[in-house]
Amino acid sequence: AQSVSQHNHHVILSEAASLELGCNYSYGGTVNLFWYVQYPGQHLQLLLKYFSGDPLVKGIKGFEAEFIKSKFSFNLRKPSVQWSDTAEYFCAVTNSGGYQKVTFGTGTKLQVIP
Amino acid sequence: NAGVTQTPKFQVLKTGQSMTLQCAQDMNHNSMYWYRQDPGMGLRLIYYSASEGTTDKGEVPNGYNVSRLNKREFSLRLESAAPSQTSVYFCASSKDYPEQFFGPGTRLTVL
Image (cartoon, rainbow over all chains, first blue to last red; front, side, top):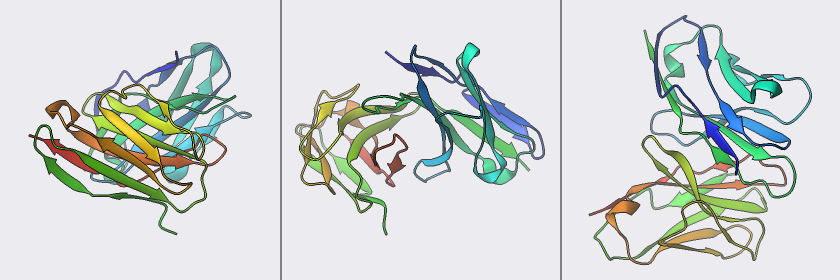
């Protein structure tokens, strides 16, 4: 069965600091990978996704993620965070063939201090 | 275009009571999902419906039932609520690809 691990549960950064959130998955086949963001009191929104092609994926609001197949990783990065990035971030994975049941990680809460 | 809508937004139940959470999408998506979100556990899939007329169990189906009423609507029923079902419930939908669109959630408390 596929699984997703997010090792950082709670991250606190100052504004303008760089961000990297870890995501590792376990699945032997071809995968699709996602990062979702949940701002306080809101529902999940898609930040970026990887299906195939360039392993460096750019998403909204200056976020990017790199798919490293050999490491089964899909880490999220942002060069300079803002207070408005305070949110919970979820990594998710699904197999690319057949029915697309998505498995989510447990989430990382990011708190950005002004 | 409202996307995915859920009702109610908040609900408090007593142990043993029943209720149905409603979800509707207006994006003509084939697949719909019900998740629960608990602190430190992320989102866990309760049930999903790959297409109209089909439903399947997810990771945590016990204590729940679902109905895919038509292509637009997918309801989640708690027959006899328990405190362990206190959670935030999200409905989601997707078209042919796995990118999911989420509703605003229902915050349920079972006393």
